[in-house]
Length: 410
Image 1 (tube, helix red, strand yellow):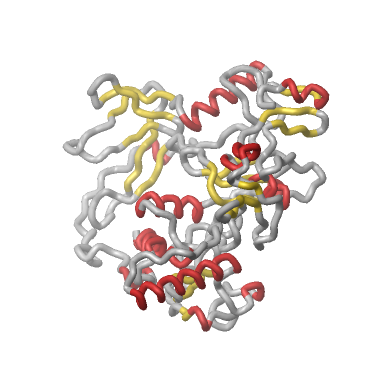
Image 2 (cartoon, one colour; image 1 turned 45 degrees about the vertical axis):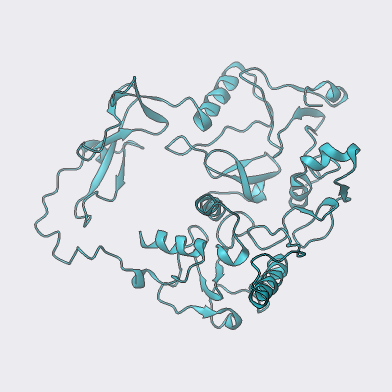
């Protein structure tokens, strides 16, 4: 609970940065002998089974967490209840990929397979595999125990990119061959949670900085106070160490500091953003106006580099992480370029920079993925993230390169 509180403080950029000790590990109502007289009910026998996914251990609902608490997994077709506030605490829950299905306003039902979202996509994939109609670049979706999407999706031989629990693409990408279980995308997902809470995008000094793959950057500075964190979950790796002032960070003061930081924390895009931000804040203080116009902020990614898509008053264009131009600038007022400008996302040109093999994706003039992608003489349709796109439960259309203009997405 303490770790989550610290993370929320970072995202909201309030001055509650501290260690788990300063926040307190236990409820103030709990003391060392609070559990001495606790009568603990037995843990469901199913939880002690050697069968995988037989149950899930959790913190006890009791105030001081005195007893072991486990929810035994219910199998498909077995009785379940969604409960209500008047019920006693649960001892079981529908297993992975299952949900408690009830009728009308009843609270009792049976555990049934989920048919929507990630689980629904898995079932369609499995049907295609069974009837031999899989696309050659299709990848089976991976879902968590709640039927939500796992942190990332992959394009075989190219890259893997982070997704939110609803499957929507978000910041974070890495080369396909280097991906392992470490790609948690936790920082990128946490940022989106903060955006939903606040109702606006956050400035570079208001949130955790992410690594390029969507995990947490190990060096974090919020409100000019810095510390080292775990890349997987953002928890302080040295919780008892004092925070270091921004201007004093070095390999002597912070173990996670690297030579690439060159004595600075903010990267090029962040530094440009913060320079403008501070200048605007100063002018507001001097003039007492709440709105200062005439300044153009750069678009920065969550790792402090330039976002792929940049624009000015008249044009949109794609840039590298360092801000170098990758495509020609497209006019916002040119009717011939209207659709290219409207749907411009630059995802293809940025992914192509990561891929070291000769088999790079085909990109449009606006830096987007060409809807028709060909590899080794076979062509298919893809979505805006480059994933093979198939419609319904039918066969994924794939044609020889000579017939690519006949694909529906062409």
